[in-house]
Length: 206
Image 1 (cartoon, rainbow, N blue to C red):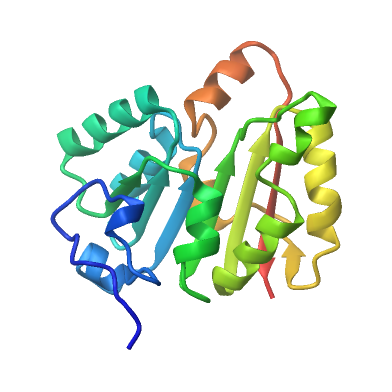
Image 2 (image 1 turned 120 degrees about the vertical axis):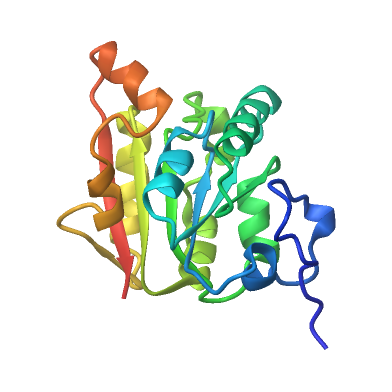
């Protein structure tokens, strides 16, 4: 019998050690609503705004930086958002090891660390091995939305995303993302104020 996730419906935060072989979202959230995952959510602006706007969608926010994570957790708790769960860990590891096939409706990856030095680029999140796991875990018609201020990273990422047969580049960003308008993350607000160009793309699982 496959191990299932413990019932975490009353807890904002979960840990890798809480999980079985495969995450059971319905046990984690206490409902069957679709699940969207944001990796690297900083202070949580996008996840929180989304959860407040779309009560019938469950959101998983993943952030490795302890300071940002604490701020995000405090804000989620203050707002009493029952459709948000948070993890302070490596998002790529969670996707690869614990998220079941075709169980996520959308991934959001905004302003990931660009690791600009050539010798560090292997540490970038958006690369073929990770995208394979995104494709595996997305439902049919599920979406991936990315944004960065680093043009070289964007060009590299979209080159292999465009060449991934299971993904189709979208003419517009996913509807729930468009609904929220601009300034969806703290990094975006900061970078736009600094005059930086923002590079964005959306993909849908065929």
